[in-house]
Length: 302
Image (tube, rainbow, N blue to C red):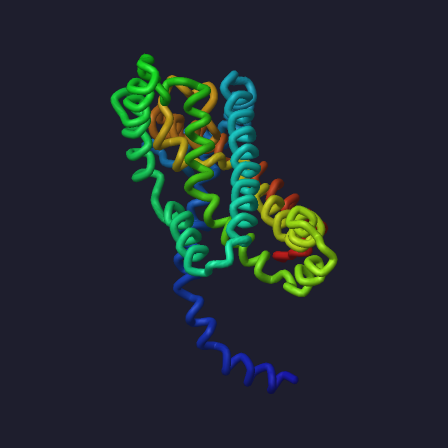
């Protein structure tokens, strides 16, 4: 047994060497920076450095729960994330069901490619496009003025309009990815089921309700459950590139708040405390999502 184990190790050692560069990169950029989280428990002194700074204990965490902004950014983060998850999954599912009914392959593939393209564009580019599109002298206000003669609307300065833009643009950018997943699940359904339903005279709605949806229920549940892992994210790239101080009340989330406290207010230790708290809660959500995925989605990671 030992000899065979040694032979097996010699045969696979080159695979371990192939993993070595990735492990080094992971250690440098992902594992080593986490040591800086100790700053959350210190009064940071730039001269003394992180390790030489005096200890603060849990003072920064106590301040975190005392500031009025904490409750609001928590509500904003969870609300934005939940709404995005629901809209993305529902719109992607509806689009996949409609596209699945199309019989012409060239048209189906063309539409699928077009809706998937925005997924590859960064929010830096898209934010610039949307800001020009919805600005006071932009296309939307120009069309509204010509049709109704009304005054221009400051979309990015209104709490209501800003959140509508956030949700709509997020769905437009990301639903194509989930749609591909749902289309793959739809193509795996046994066509004999539909043929049997046609023989019985079932309508399209009956086939959708009794065959299609039950067949892809596991995929839908799995995507919803795995989306819980990012429920404390809210989409930093999108929010940061679109928002402004006038909509902080509804748009400020954990990541944007950490950025402002750390890089704009130079409160590095407090920003680290917020980030550490967010990571701890996010880790709990990851464990819950993995447990739910294994229980209801028949999917296991570990």
